[in-house]
Image 1: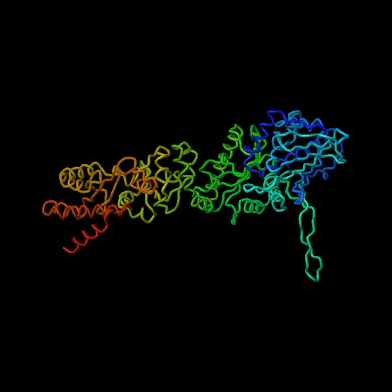
Image 2: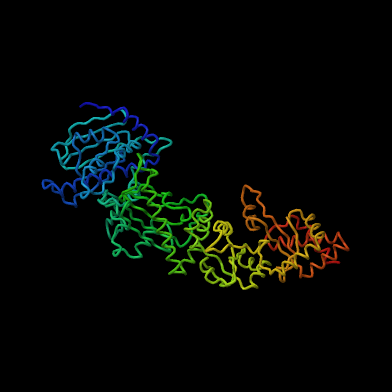
Length: 626
């Protein structure tokens, strides 16, 4: 028996793979089971085209066993097996894949699904093993051979005794270290879990002797442990079953089990696409947000399968951030995999699948909004913030995809409506879409600036989420109508006569207003206004940064220092205006006290903090007591 060396490039690749490429050691079992499945596929295919090869499909199985004493795991298949030359070629040269060659040699009409397209998967077993023995008998040979290796030092091939077709792989596990617990793989529960996680949808039975408890004596109620052969995998994934054979309850149970949710999903989306890129997808919109959804710990992504073999548990590239709440699975043959089969290459197929999935989710949400409003409202109250975040994220490049899915509270309708519904019910003379922002609907409704807009019978959208104004700013306009913040200084709802009249009032009191501005420092302007009806005072803003935006910036950990340009507006028709004019002429000290009080009141109405509440409280008490 001659010991043979791997080729030098294969040695380097094997060493690199064992020590760095495969970061998740658990996948060794997935790789070996996938290879076994390929061998069964090949034999079955041969039986269809070669009369000399007779196969009973029920005999095509994969068997798994472990021995704690010997520290071995054994994977046996009843597939096509390998000749001596194939052992030499497929296992002696790393990255030489018999499965890939087999697939390439088939005609287009004869194509069958072959999972293992790269020859490196087998060598992932060296991550957990210090010795691997492969005994195989090929359908094309009367002799059986055994291939054995302890890693980069090389391998041996010699004749072996084996009657049945197929391959048996024996892994001798490494000894445990402080960093690695290899013994965990010599556990019935662990092996079952790995099979069900990664290989549950392999189309052939994966069997193992597992422990069952049986009554030894019915009267004594004593149990004894009995080993029984159990099929560990379900074989046919729910997304590949005929839709007519799957009940809503089946989808719900799959979702709750797969994604550890205690509630049924709000919506199930099933999709099967064939063409340039073929895949099947089963997607779910949860009925509630996960507990960590709005934290940095949350991981988005769909479970990615290649012909039923789990490749990645959470493939984030398949979902845009604004649909990160979607759960589900995608199964495809067309995704190119890199050498480790753990990470995806940036290839065209993956991007095409992601684009199609995004479009499908968007379409389904649109249909829900149109035909199932109650459920859509429920969905939007849970995940609407994420959609609005998607509108202004990435400089608004996705706004057109999402703008018809977002909703805001309507002052007139007293419920959530879309922008399209707002436009459809606008008054004929209305030129803008009006909105107001605040912490709650009640607080927004109480804003002094709302009164003027409501008096003209215009609807107002109440924005109560922190992202709302940023989304509105990104949208800019909808169906040719621009957005107008009722808290902006240039709302422009007055007639020309009203504008001229208030202009004259401000010119006549310019010195008074300038002194108020000097006293307050923080405001960019102080003026009298005729747009407030019953309210004495308010704060408005100039420029792109509104007062509500400033609150968001102020709440950020890094204190960005972005401030709104605030304008203090005083109702010219309110008695307080006359009081200010009188004090300005007769009592400058009290005039300045009133200025501070009015500004503090305006800040409270706007939901802004008062820097020195004690001072303002004392001033108010002083004014009241006189």
